[in-house]
Image (tube, rainbow, N blue to C red; front, side, top):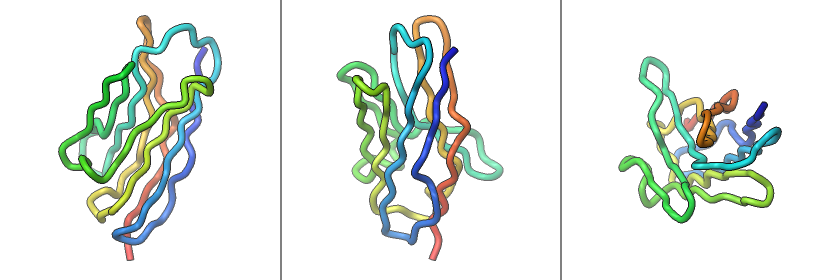
Length: 114
């Protein structure tokens, strides 16, 4: 069993920054990728950023503003979000993918508003 615990969400003003963390624990033998998704009200869940080995991928809407990083020793992935916009308001979810399964965190709300 694998558990993912996200933290770091909250209310932030436009132009501000916030850092999300996702710590994985449990029976983790091999990680293919860790990623951040988000889901805004009335919209589908979308990929924000993904890190797999030495490869990193970003959604076009966040390129240049968000940075994903990973501490392999701690099985933790981070999402540094800068220059936040109201359109970034969403519940942010962490996802861990192994060769056998995929796991999701419970989500953390990020609200960008003045």
